[in-house]
Image 1 (cartoon, rainbow, N blue to C red):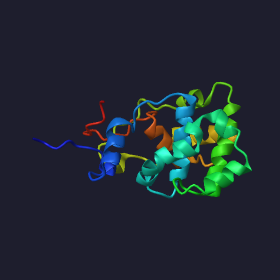
Image 2 (image 1 turned 30 degrees about the horizontal axis):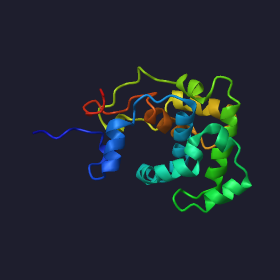
Image 3 (image 1 turned 180 degrees about the horizontal axis):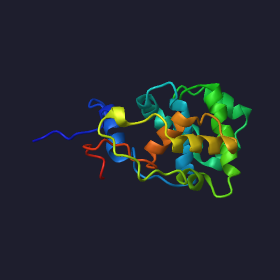
Image 4 (image 1 turned 45 degrees about the vertical axis):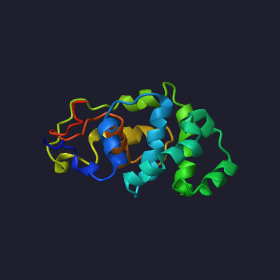
Length: 183
């Protein structure tokens, strides 16, 4: 029996990482709260391993009220302090405050966050053969970051925007031979 080929970043040792790679990463995800969750988690991931965030994901969901945009937008300084005291999440004041600020900015989007983000989909992007073929940013991620910032979002630079695009299926960066590419 031959072993399934996966993108090398997924590793082969952690079942949580494998499940994320095989069943979630790169698949289309829509809906304002769902996309907001990913914007927040990508920002929290900055400077850390994605596996760290995956391991804390359920804690993040509980701490941030399931990433319901109206609930997070209504957070106060007491909520910031509550989140800073929550050992189940990454406790970074700037990122916590950015999440709350971004929820407020998302509420002000006339067509919603999902609609805005999906305008930057890159369905015709080249199929990567190796990880060296996967860019850190693209013109699309730069444009998405610029648009989000124009609407007041924080922690959404071009690299974070591209990671978001990969994660929610705006671009399919599974390698050419990856078992998850065509799922």
